[in-house]
Length: 136
Image 1 (cartoon, helix red, strand yellow):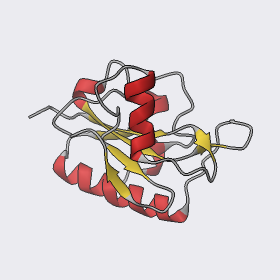
Image 2: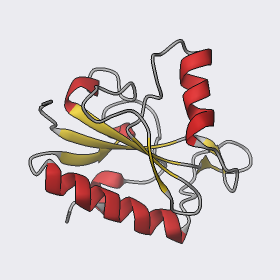
Image 3: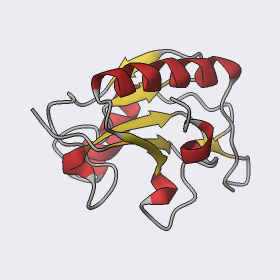
């Protein structure tokens, strides 16, 4: 079993309202980047659906230097029409993300919930996940 110390929240960096499936993200990661699988463990669709990505027992490919000790969760969106960072989460995504993070925190009680931006120079996930989920 992996020692999970972080639950890292991401966005797909796609325009607001553009639906992206797990299979599409997997294609980006496998065919375009040459990875073995989708980099994230969980994907939250525009409709709030919670979709399994990479198995949690396998380190992700979502936050360089932190993959071996983290679980990666991504929501679809994160950019405005001009591809500038914007919190585009739908109400359904916010609800599902909160529920999933509660579940993950229950399974990994010592893990800190943070945003990708907290371990990189990116704006991802386009909101302050560390502050928003500090009470979980």
